[in-house]
Length: 320
Image (tube, rainbow, N blue to C red; front, side):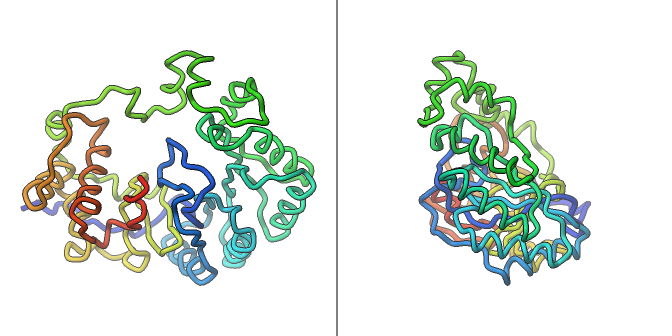
């Protein structure tokens, strides 16, 4: 039995975003939310946007960002989201894009001008070798040039990679092997610090023994997300969720037993639960407790076919 020294409740929010869709043109190796073309082409509607934003406001947050998936895959939907958020008095810090939608400068300027009229002031343009495996760099450059033309602010993420990517032919896509061939075998470590094929793995017993406390980061509200299904995703814990309507109240152990176990018993508590009750057999090594946690949750969803309120959306596990 866990000693309940602290309450598990989300009663305020600091900084976060809105996930408009999980469908994406790309399946990037580093994607936290396992977005890809395999997802259904569902997009957040006006009602869910409003309900999410009103909950965010009620818990003290007054500005958000908007991301996906790729938000620009439904321009009418994105326009509705921008207008709805602005009408509710919440500031949009930026909308994220991978630039896959770019066709030519004139049409891009038309799209961005329309969004600017709706209330958008800043576009986060993704600059990453992982995106370049799926998207030619000329599209990224074209979107940035269109932003300059219509006087929309650009948030380049991450500009440090610009010169590396621009050294290749910008009309083509370039797999990561081309980067490691050009820049050396350690380039992938630089490009993605949490990639299991290049970082040292730790025996699972060591991870368990060194993480005896509860996962208090589940209460971290400095980088939250709400998605198109009304799920609140705590911090960087993709695949874990609390329904929007359950925020502001203590998290129910009956409705969210796995979250309750993680918060009070940590990864050791979840490991014991899933191993004892559901026959989980661990791999020998993992990157971290979060890597092990994902494997435990995958076992429940994919191997055992179990449904839990907190393991949403289910398609995350199918695509991760």
